[in-house]
Amino acid sequence: MALQILLNFLLAFLWAAMNDTLELPTLIMGYIMGMIAIYVIRNFLPGSFYMIRFYRIIKLIVVFIRELVIANITVMKIVLKPKIHVHPGFYAYPCELEEDWEVVLLSSLITLTPGTVVVAISDDYSKLYIHGVHLTDADEEIRGIKSSFENVIKEVGQP
Image 1: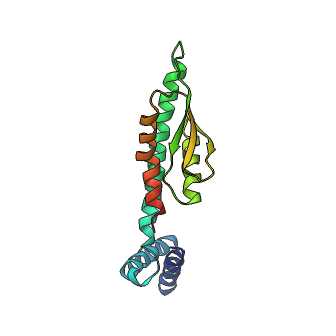
Image 2: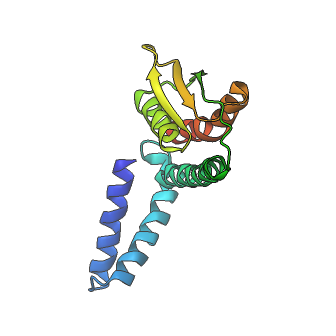
Image 3: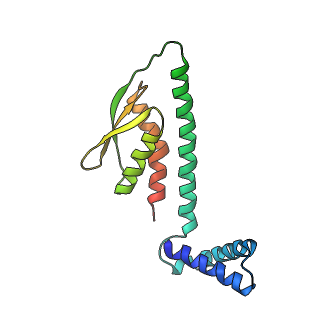
């Protein structure tokens, strides 16, 4: 992936040099032309086409922002009620991610989402211990995290 990005920047500057200008529109056009060229020769380069991973990263960011907004609204509803009825609790989340950075990313995203915090990770990284502010059904929370964060992180980690 890094080789493809570096090659794309090199092709962009080569395009700008051939057009005898270093203006931003010329560099952008060179980058786009370089991206097309790299896509054409992607079978001869190591790894998959780098824009696929870029798309997956953008997808993860969008999923996180969506979950962040939903969690903020949920916590706001809890806090603004005249009488607070919360059911805090702990639950063990079975993590299927294999790479260390994936587990760290998942636990960071869970912690950054209001209402949940990862308090511990098992030694073999197979379980995350999570505290939820309003825990009504642990299985539903686990399904929610798997369907949103974990699946998208798996996509980002694919080569």
